[in-house]
Amino acid sequence: MSLLTPRERVLAVLNHEVPDRVPIVIGADLTTGIQERAYRRLTTYLGLPQEYQPLYDWPELGAPLPAEAVLERLHSDVRGIQDRFPAETYARNRSRPPGSPYVDDWGVGQPEIEPGVYFPAIHPLKDTQRVENLESYPWPDMHDPTRFAHLRAEAERLAAENRFAIIGAPWLMSPLERAFQLQGMQAFLLNLVDAPDFAAALLRKITDLCKTHLTHFLGEVGEYLDLIILADDLGTQNSLLISPRTYRTLLKPLHAELFALVRQHSRARIFFHSDGDVFPLLDDLVEIGVQVLNPIQTTAGRMANLQELKQRYGERLVFCGAIDTQRVLPFGTVEEVRAEVKRVIEILGAGGGYLLSSVHTIPNETPPENILAMVDAALELAQYG
Image (cartoon, rainbow, N blue to C red; front, side, top):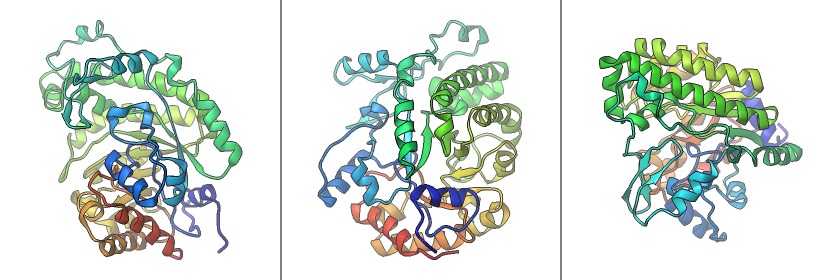
């Protein structure tokens, strides 16, 4: 088979065809990215300039926007297009007192829990259970032009080059995760039982704001996108965060609205990121339009059974991820990394339908040799499936 361009390679897999090699998805957004310390060690190891630009122009996120030289060495077949936060959010956080929490545009506070690591731990709606209190909350302005002003020029540049698959990566279009950030996970899960009308109203408000944001995003770049990343973490290590019934009643209709909006404004394939064991919801996700499933957390419940995943859903889903970040990538040997890549490709890549990536962000503990072993093994397994 002749060599394909990176975009042709990705499109072949999206069409469930067998390409010249398995495509590699690294660096499009946080879920497919590399944490800061691992990235800095990688660039040092490769002898590349120590330039560092934060993803989403957000230093506290702890992840870089990978330099083009890094993406080239990692043979990434995709390039991501990310939105930004309002100018006011950047200005306020860059002038905040040293050591104080980062506060995002939704009002969620993110303290520094260890040097250089921030986590949403200040939840502004933690003690709220009254629907009327949502009316007075200072919600973010999803019409702020700062969010979108740069998008079209970047999309047009990548489209004119026509080399890489283009992935739209708007930040956290995730109703459930936003609710967790605003209330805290425990408080919101309790409210699903104790204050269901409030929980439903909060999810509705978040979804409406996400839809406004997504409409602007797609209005700028929808025509250029091959994929768009949406997300909501629905699983844990061994089960779901919420029952299938709760998902189908409350969240599934909201996800369906977001996916329908994508289909209305773009031909982009819907790439859905959801950590944990989401196996019980796969039929639901397929039904409402998910086409690419990520990150295939192979240490979580039934998601570990790659043969069953491929057999039951291989004709309906493209799989992206599955290279373990709990043990193999950060703590395994180079030989173990290569063996895991071979195992995953042979199962999920059979007949096409697999995009190679790590299970979520490549963690800080990962040595550069293991990152390179992952991508180089994928290149060497040119004939697969």
